[in-house]
Length: 137
Ligand SMILES: [Zn+2]
Ligand SMILES: [Zn+2]
Image (cartoon, rainbow, N blue to C red; front, side):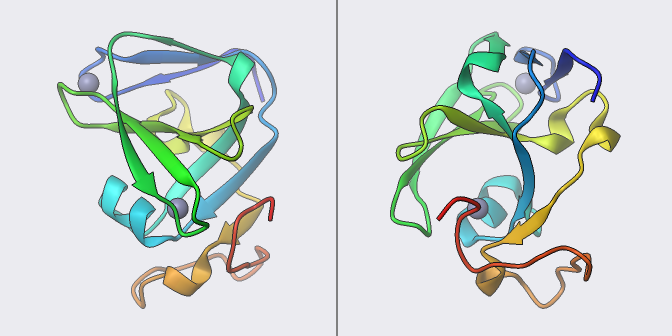
């Protein structure tokens, strides 16, 4: 992937830059991701926390993840776009919503996670490995 990768929210108040190659990509189908994003799954690009630089004011909402960890979900208080997360158990890695990238087409998910929570109308790539837990158990 071409670096840095850039992205931001719908209104442009929050912008971010990813300066290092992401460590993984996965689609999370858990219920909290569905609610937060208002969609079937969270297309999560996992990046090193030190490689994610954010400008602009955002808010974090703590949610209890399916794993039992706390996931702080960051969103723009102006337009409501869900941008990235911060997991209490994996503080060095941050999931970023691939849909908020300026060039979302570069995202390559490697796995479907928390598929047990997926909705019947959620279509998944049959070629991707599936699991009922976190990317890193
Ligand atoms: Zn915004
Ligand atoms: Zn999830």
